[in-house]
Length: 332
Image (cartoon, rainbow, N blue to C red; front, side, top):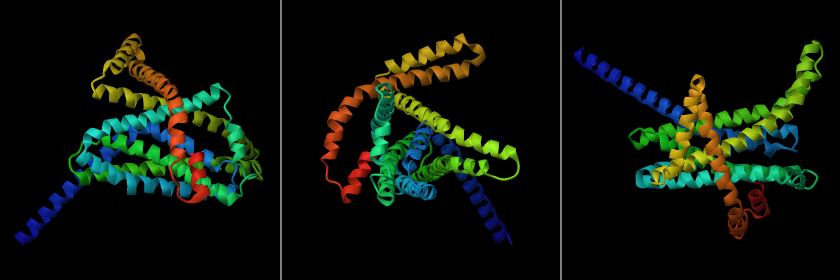
């Protein structure tokens, strides 16, 4: 009997330990996910464009294919790479984060530049419309391009998550990163699925028999969705610049060049003291705004290098999968 009681005590202790470990994983996963929020917003804002112009019946399957590719990126490729990096060369994390932050600044600044210079976004969409490519090839090209773009954003998400994981042991770190990978993928692509089908739902409601109010709501959804998508695109661009600028400023501070980061902190703190009724929000808003301005400046400086040097060099690299693989690169 005493042996059974001892065994039960051991089981109870193991259960408590497991519960504590699970709590730690959940807590750190939530913290890591919030740190990557800006990149998540951008990921959600970028994806809906990949179903533009394709048959409505293929929208959800396309989103599902991209989601599977995103999960593969995070779990099979990036998670092991992050754990190896943490174990072998943790000093590389800051430079890699800064490289990803520079990419985010470039992406955001490029979008701003296109708007300011009346860029050819519509013309680019027309060049890849179902009128010039059959639906199957266009879908394949779009999915490849989306997964390629997602890989870069996912790498930034996993690196950001790793940077705030403050637990010992590769197993626990891996569990946290796994929860972040699955949770963020489900959140992003679940939201994307809702967005791309919202206009179809609105259209059905607008044609429903019965209560006039239902048809009114449906028409409102249909009219609102273009505005909603534009707002999401703007928020995604702002998030890219904010997160990218913040990563670069933090990275410079950690590498010993703390003047820009310190200046932003001092200005935000002074602004918060000037508005004591909303000190917390004011400090965050000023910090995010200055981070975004810094990110925009860096991105604008990077655009010529990326378009004149990096892009031609990448274009000369060998590709796999023939024309579709090359097309995927151009669509990402």
